[in-house]
Amino acid sequence: MAMDLSELLNTSPETLAIAQRKALSAHVCARLSQISDAIHHGRYAEVEALTFFSGAGDGMGSDNTCIDFIPNGIQKQHSHNEPWDIEVVIKRLKQLDEVIKASQMEHAPVARLSNTQRSKSS
Image 1 (cartoon, helix red, strand yellow):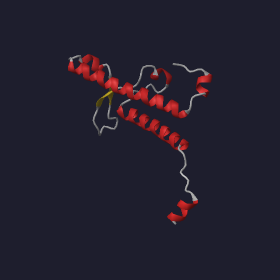
Image 2 (spheres, rainbow, N blue to C red):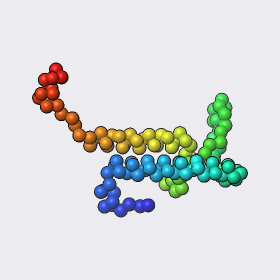
Image 3 (cartoon, helix red, strand yellow):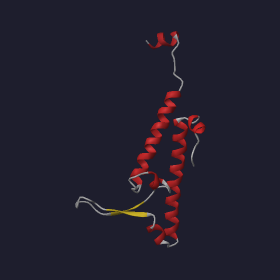
Image 4 (cartoon, rainbow, N blue to C red):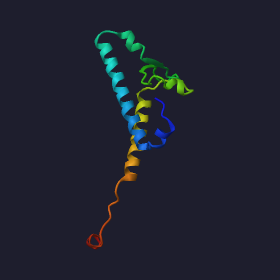
């Protein structure tokens, strides 16, 4: 979904963050539902195709198999080509929440005290 220049310039960071958060959240929930359904119906190969091996790396921890939450097409856009485990997804959702929150605070009306209210609070 490529946006042309006029769409980009007419879109606020908050609107983009809201759209990204909504899409990523829906994607993660759909992936979990897909895995749940596959397990329920005994389609284990389908589940295995949605996972990746994560070695401990330091010889101290445990090797793990994790669910890959990376949306289709993302790997081709980034050079690292790394999977997204739940930690990566949660970090990205928190970042988007912060953008949304900051933008909403920026546009929130500022409460001003009248002279009467200021003298009562003093």
